[in-house]
Image 1: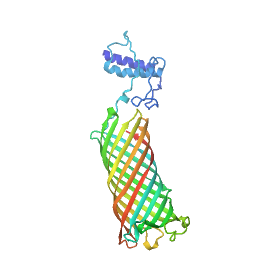
Image 2: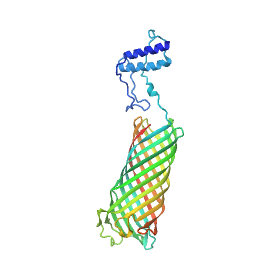
Image 3: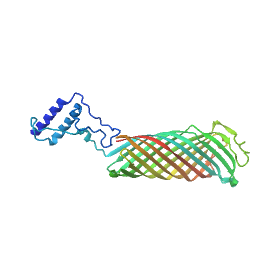
Image 4: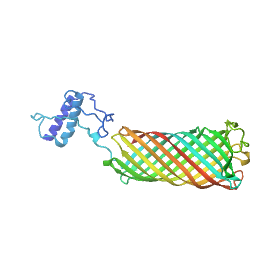
Length: 386
């Protein structure tokens, strides 16, 4: 009965002292506060000067009195004093989920190259016989990403889906006779095409909270498609006095006319590792690196001005490949569950072997000497966690 009397007495005092709309500190992350307690401290002795603060303190003492209130009546000589604000019970009790979620969006500004070469096997021509180099292709893409960790098993899944535009850059088309005598060299502009990509990974991670470190390993799949179109054709100096193309600097095809289109698709298996390190209270760094032990290349080449090759696509390349991928992000926690970050990324795929067939019959194969695609750039991201 004494315990109940103390509790009821404190309740009556708090009701009498509290205004109708007593303000309390919101549970937000103040810019100068540490992540473990984002609310500002209430100065000692300010309880009696601020009615809303006094009300909060009394309500906190009610919760404490249920468990350990002293055996004294309301009219007793013993007084009650609280020197700091109590955290409401609602902040202490949180649902414990076996899962940890994170997800968000990114913008990727990138530059890319694609290099292609083949030999036709004729001893009168060089090895390679022809090369097409696509350089300085500028990509602007957006992507959505997500990750789910199952904490008891330490397994996780993650993925991303993105796409955007490719503009800028140039394509150099060169042809060679035996002893690599260059008999044709032209340059075209690249403009107005697209890129799409997706990744999905499954992995296992180990967290060391006391050290602020998480490390993991994963296996996954990467789909990467780029479509590029070269416009026009300008003759460059060659080794046979430009007898096939025209004077150096002359425009053979107007730069408003599309001449060659590449649609390159990589389907890759990847194996990698990741690490997350807390640098300071709000700063973390995330990184991953992966090797691509096997990838399959499919490139559909459309020579739009070559009637002798038949309907487009009229040059088909198929090859096996390998590669490497890496990225790193520096993240800042703006709020407890919201971060922004700046990062960098590299993707590279390189062929090991392959073949090319030409239209219109697609009956004779020639040997692929080179096909690789690389893309690298900087990223901005916003990420929420739960």
